[in-house]
Image 1 (cartoon, rainbow, N blue to C red):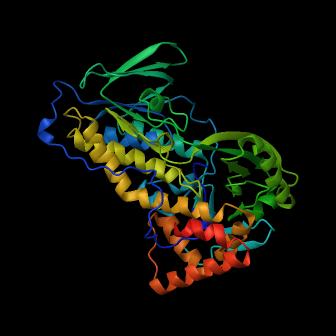
Image 2 (cartoon, rainbow, N blue to C red; image 1 turned 45 degrees about the vertical axis):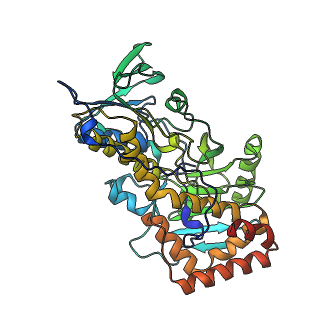
Image 3 (cartoon, rainbow, N blue to C red; image 1 turned 60 degrees about the vertical axis):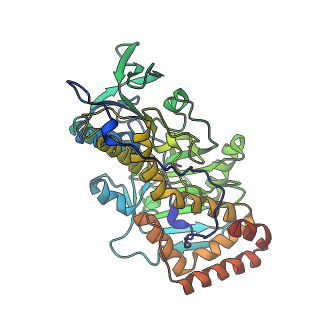
Length: 450
């Protein structure tokens, strides 16, 4: 799911062992003097997709002097299937107005496979919360801001991308609009922010990745039942609701989002959705389903995220974390980093850029900043989501205040929290103890150590 609550999940210091790499680290250098100037015009960039990734990229490009075109296929009010949780740091970093927030979640409850409940949030400070909002509201705001910065918004569906015939020749964007079925636009740079099924990625042969499927129902509840979810979100784990992920009940403005996801058993997704409704039945009984949504979630970054003068960001690049399924913050962050990288490399839109520029100014910086976060959450998912026994151990650990503090610090501020060595050692021993008590120490500790 493009935004999930990582704060439900225990946070440890970064392991010293190295899990299997999904990212490739890049060492690239290039001389600024080798970039040719553009005579009589500015660098032209097309951003395909107007979600958090695309809008943030377009705003950065336009603000930096690049002639920018932002393509979005859906009308502004079209609902987006997403849990809608964003960390506290995103509100300030991306200047998100507080009136866009539907709910300020300060209480989380995680349910084990045997329905043991643990309250998560004891360590939150008075000014700390997880913001819940609707993607259609956030996306519309971010697109409008990109347009105000100077980007040209095109309401249309991109159908194909023609690659250039020489290193400085243009890319051609082919697209349809409501009034015109065949249109084209020549640009120098393309940023693909068009989701997990990215056409831009296919055009540059960026490779495939494994995808989970998320299924969600928006359920309108009575005022009395909504009062229960005033500032509460719930997470359910167990083989009944997902064999490798989790299910959720997230509060919105006047309804709740109830859903689940899976990688291994996509064909059974409706069975898992039925199971989460059954487990939350006493709290959602009598509600009316107002919308049903489903969408793919990338499970790891694509093999290729930059090729030529094309870069992928957000879900198109595969920037959704394992374990929590969070994607909104990383989408917006990758879009902004990529846009700023193009501005720097082109010297404010005055010079042509190339693949080495994108690799150096965007991809290398992204991997250096976030690769360990993605690896670590991949490790946690392998340890704690493999069986009901390990899930019981996860819930037991979530009751520990040190786990809660470290987890919230990591999630809310997007930095892997650094704890004291003695507390980390104690937490490691508690993890072993929980896995032993739940009868899953062998296979899970193998995953933790390797």
